[in-house]
Length: 259
Length: 303
Image (tube, rainbow over all chains, first blue to last red; front, side, top):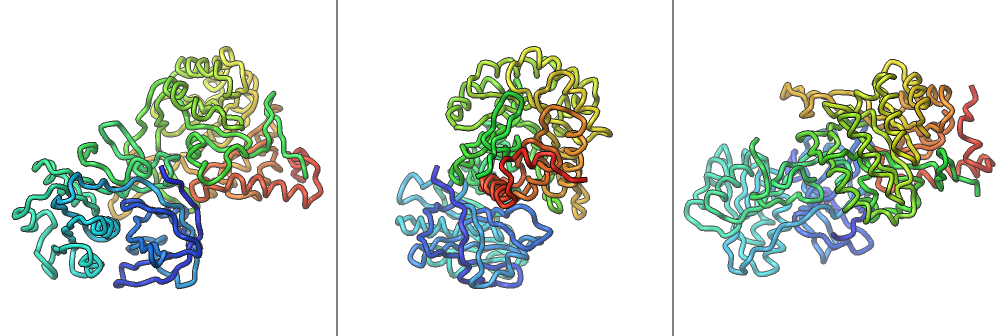
């Protein structure tokens, strides 16, 4: 496993996508450590009496040329609200890089599908960019409740074909990602997914029925992020394992998902 | 430089800062961040005779200035520890304690007995205070009779440093402390977590799969400090204090209350380097106040 660091990174930019979502673009005078798609960071939330623990957040994108690390964050509670108040020039303390990463497809010409929902699309941008750079062809299927929940579409378009669904039909096909016509018309060799658990379970079911290689990225609540507290476990064929060290990316065949 | 060495029974620690069981894994989880051999003592994850899967997820809830956990002693069992984990940690230059738990008296005895033969494990912390298991755990630590019983039985078979970890979920913790001291405990550590609960008002459901769990973090510090002070007055053996220690000042408060050593727990989750910061901070405090030894501080509370 790669060495983990605790570093103060500087906020270069805090970019609001709308009133619910923002992207923190972080950098450092030093070269950022090596990071892999699927990995996450634990950020310390300073100055909030309501949030005590760090917040685990997926690595959204790494721009090597700009020496930038992006975090896509949804304002949900006191901790993420406090993070949303960060301004350019502020520092943010991170422990990273944490967890495992997505697995490269077996064949270069594999037909790949990356399925994301809501803020769960975050790690798929980094993964898509990584695959694109290695010469893989990606399809992105991104879903949200409404068009306000479809994020970073322009960024995704740089790395592959983008397909969308919304529950209210305001963008792309109406319905859930697993109802998209693409799934009926195309055979995929590998599927990677991150989003709400019910969505990932539906994706996993689809992949399992068709016998498609499928990895999902879980976002269990965590304390330490480094395998010490054993709070973030998921049930697998090998028993309870830590999502922070054995995951967050799991092959669906190892997960025991009986609700 | 002031002397930081302390003695727990026959055992010498290079400084009074230890890590609390269940918050520091087996130590190596933190070696990317700090030189773990600087720590006075590492107490590894609660270990039982047989493998335990622990409680179902969710096992953790964040609370104001703290957290609830309901891990339920997930571990691979003592034989796995001896065969697979011990070889990887035995050369760490610090005192490594194994936290021992059981569902029955017999399980405590067999587990402790197996640890006798490990040269680089100078002591055990007997956990009679885990609030997150259905059988054993805290049940042993909440009455003088059963606490005495388990300490007596383990003392018969275990020859090295025997630290006993007490539960705060009792009416009079000094009574329990005296009972375990009478049966041969070499030192007493406290407090384990306080039984608590968290509810999700929107879902109208408990947050933890077990409904209740153990509260730790700064939220419990005043209670822990009070209990350490009470126990330190009630017994002659060294007391190891813990509960919400986040920095050197917190640690010094426990030493003043009568603790010979302290354990850092939940703080490790927020700052993986906090233990060495506390060691350095205690040293600076001693120097600043012209104390020659950490013993000038222990129990030095002026009342």
